[in-house]
Image (cartoon, rainbow over all chains, first blue to last red; front, side, top):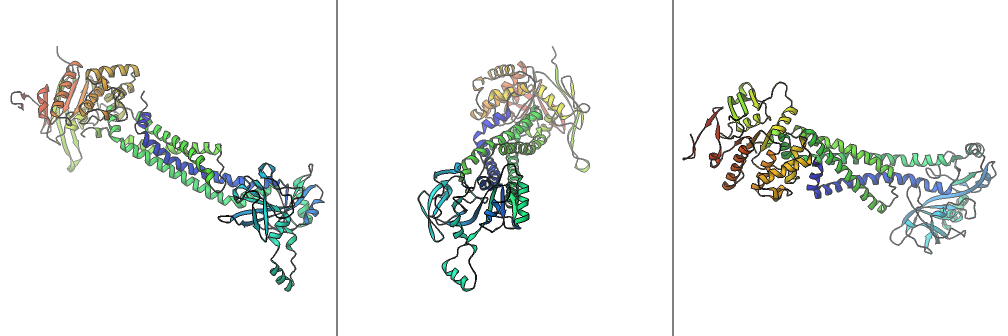
Length: 381
Length: 239
């Protein structure tokens, strides 16, 4: 039997491909939107995974250090270290800063850590050039996305720092590139005031004691100890808020990403609906263009099922081609976005299912038109 | 030997509208057309030619009266759209003012579409189609698209399509309207040949008086009824 849908598409191949490409771009944007959400999830966990701490000890009744600001004394790490069950503990700082660059300032999150400490936030697998920090002062490791090169000098606060290492794909939960500096430099940057301000403060009787503050103490628990129990001990005796790695992930995803995820979800749903409407309109127009032929086919006695199957097949093929173009389009452009886009195969298959359902729904308008076509319209010119 | 009756119409009535809007188009029309006959259907515009054609073609249901296509009474009790489609598919061939070939199918596919829908194998349908195209002297264009053919060539393909399902009846709606005089005569001669050789009853709606001498009978709608006329061949006028 002649495949009417195939023949019709072959006859208007150029128009069909251009239409499929147009709808494909919409579907590509849907995939990108899903990718943005996936990227946010990945970004949220990079730093947590690289630090790989079992416990995050922060200022009491805060959700620090990412969701809320938190300050604890640096020497708290020693107090935590001697608690039973703790294997390692280190102090860390996290602050948003703008690095002066050649064209425009680069917004980054600076991670300050003790370079002689037992917990290193730089994942060696992500270090693509240079080395980790070796000196307590004036060195910096940057993410490749910042655009800085090895040995380049960057002014941080009052001092020049030399780029000694470059990492790849290291970003904060907000998607900003990460840079790594020593804890001392970080404390200087975050808590040291200018000489004039120190003089003013001393004149007012305020002593600058914040230079020994950090944002969090991270700790790893010895094997054989229950992480929740150790966390409970710290909460009880040290008057600090303590979060396990899982809790910290939840804070990041639930508190920081949930709204964005909902927004992206809504955009995605709207785009899918718009794509369905566009496919329906295209199929309706394509059917209208063939109404004379459809009337003739009905007059000749061709069963409705044959004509309906042509319309449904064309709609499905349009959906499938648009899906393929959408995938190609999204893969061509995803790395041009400033933030991470993660395109996952299961998401693409889910979208494929949605496109098939949307195409079937869209074909209804064409099918309705076919069923209502009057064979008498073929007679009488 | 008397020829079989292909179309028998008895007391056919077709009205449109109701009460004060009632329009009577056909009233008590009765006639018979035999297989192998080529009959012209003429009437002024709006007199009901197309309506009559649609009723015979099982496209439009009559208000009352009977239509027999061969041995089968159409629009009998509880006929559905599916039944009318089936009888159109199996017994009737249609030819239109314009060729109305399906533009996305080539000539051969246009001719084989209906037989294949009727369950004829692709091979057998193609063989029959090629025979028809050869019969209509257009076989060399079997794999061309209709957009690549002239008006006359397309009309010949449309005739082949109408013959492809071995119909007992062909209903032609002004098949020469879009053609020049020479091509019109060529098409009508072809229909005459088909009527005789394929033993098909052909009703042709026409306004073209130049082709009237080629018809066996001329059927005219007058005062909502059917009247058969003869042609004064010397004067080429209907008497």
